[in-house]
Image 1 (cartoon, rainbow, N blue to C red):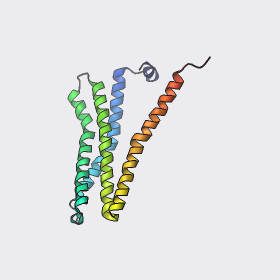
Image 2: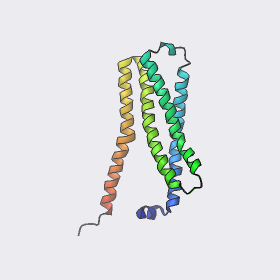
Image 3: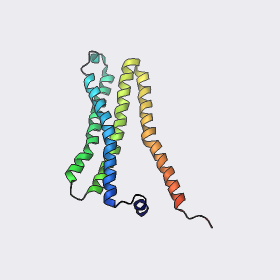
Image 4: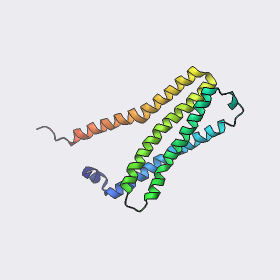
Length: 169
């Protein structure tokens, strides 16, 4: 923490404020996409071709719709947590809880995107293509949202440890 403070020259409270502001900005971007996806899913049930869905497609639709609703709830939770704990000296806790909520929301969003792609491709091209597209979507989310950040974090940690070690004599 001391090295971090010297780089940014901020107090722990200032860091928490900045971290929360950055998290809220990230959530604003994600939340818009979730809301558009949720609205799209809501409208599907009112289209003329909706009755053509088979039981599996209807189950996928309902599951995906509920996942989208859950994602929207999770992504709107951090401002609620902040509001409940506002002016109580709990910004560090707000940042920690909000970060966990954002991670959970991304997991749910990955499942939502998977379900939406599965449903649409299944309806348009057939079950095998839908399953393939859904699996590819899930894999893409896993790679881009979990594996890549984890590898970047690992590389950064290795670099930081190497820089922190004194040079050999």
